[in-house]
Image (tube, rainbow, N blue to C red; front, side, top):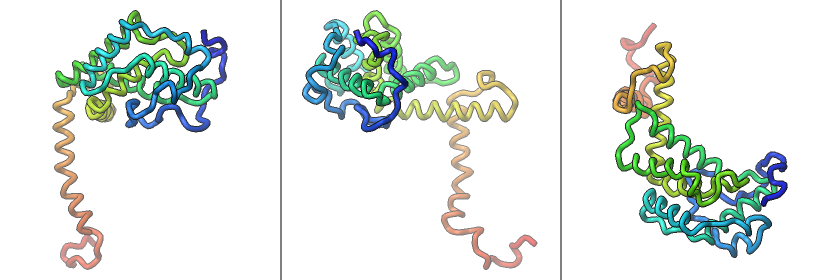
Length: 233
């Protein structure tokens, strides 16, 4: 199966992608039908999508995105065909890579003792991580070349409308923690700070910024006709 794929040269961008490289784009906006993907692509015709595993996949999908329609086997197979066709043309399939990076962020936020994820979001994130770790019931075998993480990437994508703000906040928290640790000469994990402290510091910084913004917007400090008594000589 997929003979020769492992020996392909590194993939690079060389034209339109089968999936958008923009992490804001949702896979649900893409036509993944067999008619769009092609009725046959060498190798993918033998992809086995177990009915029970597809049901489990859609159960997780319903949990992370309740309004999302379940996927059919034809849709998943169509998506896999398109990914394989792009890989065969040595195109960079950014969709899977970007979503797996998001999956790593989800895992990091869950295990970070200094970041308290709200309960509803924690449930969504835990469901995604559990699906990633359950290799026995993966819809597409994890070790399958090129498309082995496609099903997990689709789940992550479906959850992004719910999780994007939380993951962006966590990224800002990590930057803040790193900067604070560097300022006082500690390693980031040793710094005693948490989400509440980070939020308080953000609010404090905003309060300090407001007068500066008002002064900048009204042009204060930029004119030369200020009273002489207020000039510094």
